[in-house]
Image (cartoon, rainbow, N blue to C red; front, side, top):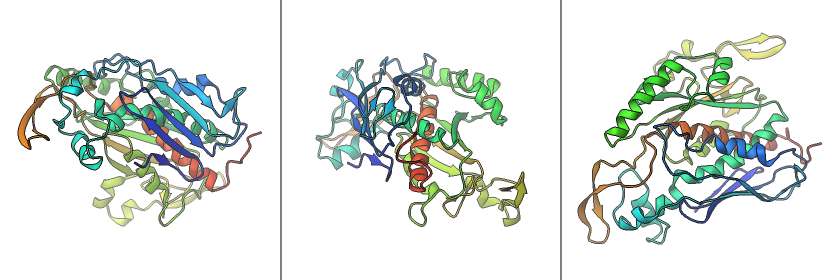
Length: 363
């Protein structure tokens, strides 16, 4: 398995859904960064089940423990190791379907790849549970990015085909944490909740779209031609279970535009070179251009649904049917919002360090 991300700011995730714990080791974090357990816990709490109809009933506390790398409220320069224990795992449902792969999950591909030795409980290493480790690393990365003025924000813009109205950034900042779906449009959020409730009652699930912003990014981040900024961001985001699409700026809509419509004219504003529009999403040639980085992530519906589905029995290679039991999110989108932020932060932090913008010691 490949479980590490980043060149200079490197996170290595470990643990399984129903194992003893999930955690992360961060290597390359500069010494002297002021950070507390509360700073990390605050971010991790954002991805916990929110008690809404969208969420699983699995009630992990997700209390973060610092094992190394932080002393007296500052990083030491040593690897930072963070973890949270799995306290509320129930593997009984998975024992019964060990050889009956769930449609939409990695059960079959993991079985083939690892010869059946993979931890199948709750999806094991392929579970959304591992995203708690991404958020831990993202919490540290966010603190580092603050030193160069970079801010990151993500929010839900679509669930079940219901699209939120565009909002100004100030309104998004204000509304997103107050809404259980992390949607800045209250009216759209009400309809989203209604559809999620409807899906849950019919033993189904819904997907959606998350939009992410990174503000105050300096021009020049990115290492073309292979380590482009959007290439590494996409790699990080596709490591998040359930993500099936990533686009930047105008994204796929650029394919239907004319060049005169899609190009972003350069201009000077307050003595700074900017673009009049931002169809590029803040990236040109794989390098940040100083404009806000904008991206959108497509999240598929939660594949664990109680409706009857067709599958196979891996032992007999005969057709079979399956009704997935257990505790699952009717919509994973809201809990994925802080994960998108985290993976953006980790990637941008790594590129900032590669550009020499973040020193080895924070003073």
